[in-house]
Every structure is written in C-alpha cells, then in structure tokens.
Image 1: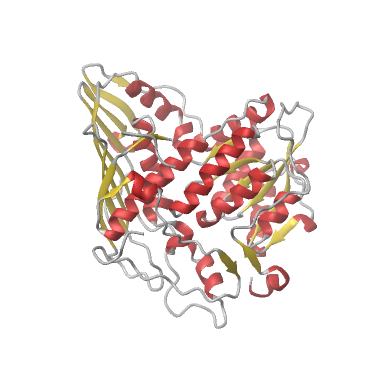
Image 2: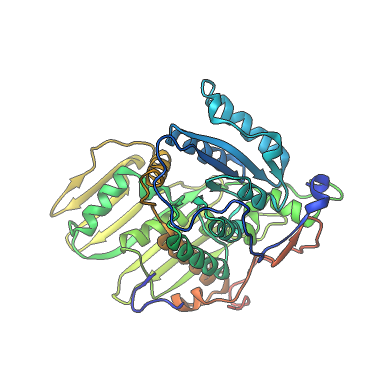
Amino acid sequence: MMHDSAPASTRRDFLKASSSTAIGATLVSSLPFPTETSAAGPGDKLKIGFIGCGGRGTGAANQALSADSNVELYAMGDVFDEKIEKSLDTLQRQFPDQPHKFNVAKERQFTGLDAYQKVIRSGVDVVILTTPPGFRPLHFKAAVEAGKHCFLEKPMATDAPGVRSVIESVKKAKEKKLAVCAGFCWRYDAARRAIFKEVHHGRIGEIKTIYATYLTGPVKPMAPAGTRPAGMSDVEWQVRNWYNFGWLSGDGLVEQAVHSVDKIAWAMKDRMPFKCTAVGGRMTPNHEGNIYDHIEVNYEWSSGVRAFMAQRQITGCHGENRDYIYGSKGNAYVGRRGGSAVEIIGASPWKYTGPTPDMHQVEHDEFFASVRAGRPVNDGDRMATSTMMSIMGRMAAYTGQEITWEQALNSQEKLVPDQLSWDMNLPMAPLAVPGQKKFV
C-alpha cells in the first residue's frame, strides 16, 4: 500500500434453522483449493459460485459465463430466494442455446445470512461476490481461506476494520496464488487505460490538480415511510433497502462515487493522499435511511497536489460523470464533450480513437484467462486503498474534521455488527451531524 509521504500502518421464515451467523467466524471449506494453484487447462471445467443475486451480480455472472468456454454456474446464494429465482431465470434466457453452462441443482441454491458459506463449500472453483458491500470483507475472507478465485464488486468494505480485513485476505490470496479481480471496471476500459498511460508517461507534465464528478440521481431510493410490513425485522428491512444504510452501503461516496475516487488514485499511481477535508449533508427526505445525498471532498498530497471529488445523488439536478486532470504541460479530460471524448489538450495533444470493448466483459475475460494461465491477476492492493480513500472522504464529511490517511486507516469505528441474526433488533444509527459526530 503506497502512501504519499510514508508507508501506511498497518427471509423471515426462510431461515429459522440458520438465521444467525458470526460475522467474525473462520470458515474452513470441505473442498479446499491447493495452496499452490496451477494453470487450469482447457479441459478443466471451472465451477462458478455466485453470492448476491441482484442486478449487478446477475450482470457479473453473465460476464463470467461469457468469459470462458468451459465454465458452469454451479451454486447460487442470497438472503432472499426470490432473488435467486429471478437471477437464474434471467441468466438462462441470456444463454438460450448453452444449457451446459447451468448446473445449479435446487440443493445448491442457498438462502440466508449463511448462504455464502454453503456456496463456498459446494465445490466451486470461482466465487462472484456481489452482495451489499458491508458483507464483502467476511465473504472475501471465507473464500480466500477456502482457496477460491474471487471476483469482488466494488467497494470492498464500508468501514476501516473491514478494509483492514480485506488487506489481510489479499495477502493470503497472494500466498495461495489465487486470482482476485476487483469490480473497479474503469481500470479495464480501453480508453481509460490508454489516457492514464499517457498521463503517467508525462504527456501533461506534472499533475497539479484533479477534479472528478459523480453527479447522478438516487441509485436505490428508500422505500416510502409506512410501507414496512408488520413484523418485518430491522435486519430484513435494512437489507431490502441496503443502499440507504451506512453499514451496508457505506454511503453514496463509498458505494458509487468510489469509481471516481479510484480514478483519482489511478492518476496518482495509487499513492494515497496525506489528508482530506469534506463537506456534505442530506437535502432530500430519506425516511429511515441514514446516508448523505451529497459530499464534496478535498484530498491533499504532501507534494501539494490536490484532488476534488464532487458526489451528489439528487433527482432533477445537473448530471455529470467526468474526470479532469490538470498538468503543467496540458490537461487530460475523460468524458468531455457530451461524455464520450477521452483526450489531452496542451503542448502535446492526444485523443483516443481505438476500440471500445465492454469493460465489464474485459475484466472477466482477463480474470478467467489469468486462472487458465496459472498467472492469477490480483487487484487486491489497489481495491483496498481506493475503498479506504472513499471511506476517508466520508469520515471527513460526517465529522466535519480534517482526516489524515493514517487516522482513517486505523479508525476503530465499526459499522458492521459483529454478530448478525435475521430477527435481531438493529436500531438505525442517526444521520451524522458535522461538528457533533466524533471521529473514532
């Protein structure tokens, strides 16, 4: 992990029999992968386990099934059985002439908070982790301990303890030679790869300032007040509305705009900022949710470089998702002129004119190819630091304080409960008030 100035220090009835899971428990798979992985030959079928069967997860499963000619979807897990049914139906309709890609017997369709354990133990080779990100560190730890290759959707955690867990799992994945592919999809986009290469090779000179925007509408609006069914537990209500609760989503900056934070980090060669300040709040009613709908962060490196991250998710406002990198000899623009141009203006102008394959597919193509070749890709270090950089910005906005990288990484604030059961009481944490919320 690179720092700018010094190394960083460190369903209601659906599961009465298994409604409780220990968030910190160690999982030992009954079918562990060997510590030293080798190339998987063309004749070796790779079995895919899919954990978290929502829309993005279904998309990732589609891309995984498209990435390799000899794979099959072997197990699925979600807390809601209807999610599995809908996802499987969608996927089978997307591959109408390839029934051999599906071998998901009913007994390998698992529901509940412990579904991830059952998927991992089912005999799969590769796992796709696409649940709400609050669960990501736990699921990743279990998968790595069981020797599974992993695709993880972003972000990797919602709090600093979660990021630290991910960092430890990344180390173990390297030791076991496991492939780890992160859902920071822009790093697999051809045009972005090309322009960042130009930036890193000095075409715009020294970077002075970066401005990134992630200005959109709400991703998953909170269910209207009064629509919570009688008897629905706190945990089920929050999981069904996961985006609106900080422990599950991390906030819009962490769950969505983290893509833009990741591109800032990319521009800076994954050197983390020394400190940051931020402003933010909530302007629109959110009923029972507790996340902000806008945050703007000012990141600062000890070299004097500053990066500004503008994030907003409010209906009816100006929309923009672009990146502006200002250098001593020119400026790099990503998404300029109607959102499509990737170009450099200045002493040495440049514009991307090459192919534009789907970046989501590219990341899975490269992921599976690395497994086949026995040279596993590992995005682990940067996926952890980019996630932490976004959490750092949220900390600064919520507390109203200046937060250093070392403070953020070593924070003891734990949003995700240590013990989680379906029917437990889980009061919602209050909406943060800057100047009153304390840094932990």
